[in-house]
Picture 1 (cartoon, helix red, strand yellow):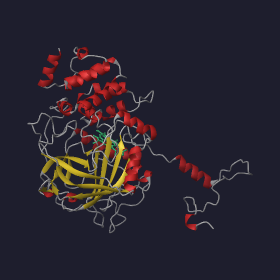
Picture 2 (cartoon, helix red, strand yellow; picture 1 turned 90 degrees about the vertical axis):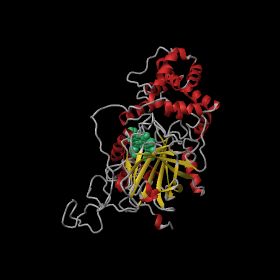
Picture 3 (spheres, helix red, strand yellow; picture 1 turned 90 degrees about the horizontal axis):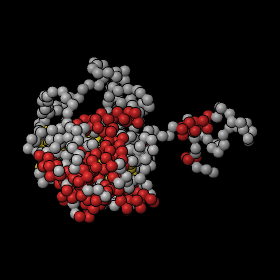
Picture 4 (tube, helix red, strand yellow; picture 1 turned 45 degrees about the vertical axis):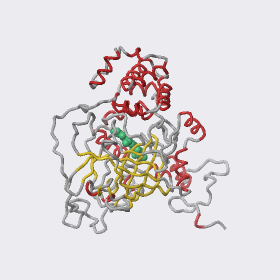
Length: 517
Ligand code: HEM
């Protein structure tokens, strides 16, 4: 006799004794409408999909822990932050990490030339902390208002539904701040070999706050202990010809066999002010902070040791965002970070629903939740405190409702003054770091980078090619010449181009332009 424990039921708990045939009049039909079991099954199936993420649709989640050193480099962590997860050596915090590609849809290739997401949810005792990062240390743009444009240019053409190099480089050619990111993305590091072999970067500038309320600017870094490994374009083509989900498979199987991936976690710190001595702005996410000036300081190690049990419930429904910080961590005025902080929870209310924070993967596991937010679609439970009067869903109240936390949270709040404006950061210096990176590349790396560029630029129209060539030349002579050779052009072909409207050139850029003439 069949095992009663595995008996099939419908969602009302009714046993299902025939799952093969609808109810029909006679064996050849017609079907009847009071066919509850069939209608429930098919109508649930009709609703199985939720909107995929507008970016980072393909991804894979795993769980693990962060173990703190109690230090930030060789100083006690408490000197810079009061965030509890960093305070004591050996302190462990549960976490979930979702890796992703950015542009492709939910079933797209994991071997594409595309940044990789690196989004960590720390389930701390003070509530959740999300650090939503990428595998590359910089980004294409520095103001969130440009994000829909950069993503539209990279996503498929709205008519042909193909990713079109001409659209991508049309946008990039008008976006000089993208040159650093493009130089990273098209370099030999542009296609990670797997999720285990990639770095993670917070990219945007955050703050840490200590018990005295003093703040420092901070950037986060994760280095894989198994090393960074990447694919060439030819290797990637082979991988994705056989398996679109190569990176998820690699991660899942490594965790199943107990080969737990680990990352060393570091921060870079900077005093919290605008640093006029630098020729770039600390709030500019198109720039790295040079490690010789702002050394990496180790704060802990992160291990992934558990796989998801259900891809949809966990990977698809996890929701992370840059607004999710704990006491001791804070935002900076980085204009990308501010825009991102609105965007994530906004899209999650649409993508998952207004009660997405009640789902198990999103709940703060190690802190209690007590709010007066109620109801809405799919409200699963009431976020009340155990002693709370269930009639009181407002604050203040003298009838045993929730009350504000009695906490001293010292914070040296910055005084902000200035005209209300729409403007760009003054210190842009769009080419300097791309040049620095190009300078450190070996010959084969330059070949690979420029070959990858030529591959796509070769499919672009002449005006787009010329402007991209102009930027590459502005970054570095050799960069320009190699791309020009690959395209069958010469740098002289772009000498007539004036700088872009509103482009701010440094003195060095101006000198290069004069030489070009
Ligand atoms: C996902 C917006 C820049 C990393 C997303 C999503 C949105 C978004 C709407 C989908 C979230 C969801 O459906 O749950 C933005 C905006 C940006 C921006 C408006 C710029 C203003 C960045 C940058 C990074 C980044 C600079 C890297 C540091 C990610 C990651 C995910 C993501 C890793 C996937 C999170 C996950 O795995 O669930 N972003 N993003 N984004 N974004 Fe951004």
